[in-house]
Image (cartoon, rainbow, N blue to C red):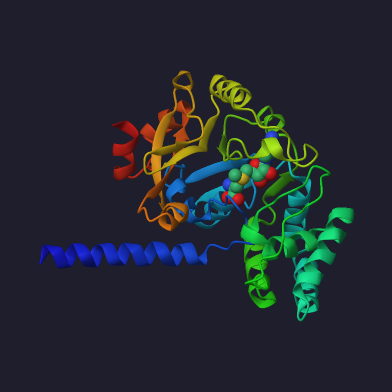
Amino acid sequence: MITILVYYYVTLLWNYKFNIKMKIPQPFPYQGSKRGIALEILRFFPVQINRLVEPFAGSSAVSIAAAFQLQVSSFWLNDAHKPLINLWQEIIHHTERLTENYETHWNAQLGDERYYFNKVRSQFNESGRPEDFLYLLARCVKAAIRYNTKGEFNNTPDHRRKGTHPVEMRNRLYRTAELLKGRTFLSALNYWELLEQCEQADIVYMDPPYQGVCQNRDQRYCPHFDHDEFCHWLDYLNRRKIRFIISYDGRTGKKIYGQQLPESLELTRIEIAAGRSTQATLLGRNEETVESLYLSKNLMKHAQSSVSVNDRNRQLLFQ
Ligand SMILES: C[S@@+](CC[C@H](N)C(=O)[O-])C[C@H]1O[C@@H](n2cnc3c(N)ncnc32)[C@H](O)[C@@H]1O
């Protein structure tokens, strides 16, 4: 009897979480997106947030989920990659124009997809237009942003797919715009320029580039990211009593990737299961990927009196 009840409860919970996840829109695919674990990450956020600041926004999966699940008065989305912020500008403020332009691209590619992708890619490298970028992201391999040393986008098309159908893209873009419109400020700054402007009432969520990734990119698109410098800015936030949460290193099985953040920052590290590793599965190993989430000491102080942290999280937080 108990087994049946547990099974029933687990199935119910899983269906509930799956349904919510499916309802949260994803405007475009993006390599490194936190969409898969956004709801897990949100469990460590206060339910009411004055302003949610994302200095490394990318596809803003966590902010979008927060707009869907929590009470957030405003958002500040930032990414040093300017074309990405131009795309966000278009999604939020010119949704219809972007939707129509995407549809034009999608229809025009049919019959000669490879040639058309290359044409749009050259166009994007000349003018940086948001609709071109959206089409490239929807069509390129692993939705990965890759630039050559000349600063040209050089990822190739995924020949197995034609990219999100325009009807579905319209749905995703409008639902995303609806969640963020009227309460989102956008910028394309280096992350620390943002941290300098943060205030005590803010919650800062940071998901910096995977350590080692940005070093090879053209600096015009993505400034160099340095671990020690980042630690310096985290210390700065601590001193200013600003609450923050970071996704940083992780591990697959026993293999740790990325440097951990130093103890001197007094952060609480939590591990979040991010699913099976495809790479390990290909090699015949059944390994779980786990991502680290670091909670700042000022967030923890706040959590002790906050009704937003449920009992299970409390055990994790205060063990
Ligand atoms: C791991 S991705 C973030 C993914 C995001 N959490 C999501 O769900 O899509 C890291 C982002 O940081 C941006 N970035 C890299 N260096 C930066 C810097 N110095 N300042 C601000 N943004 C930076 C990259 O362009 C990239 O979009």
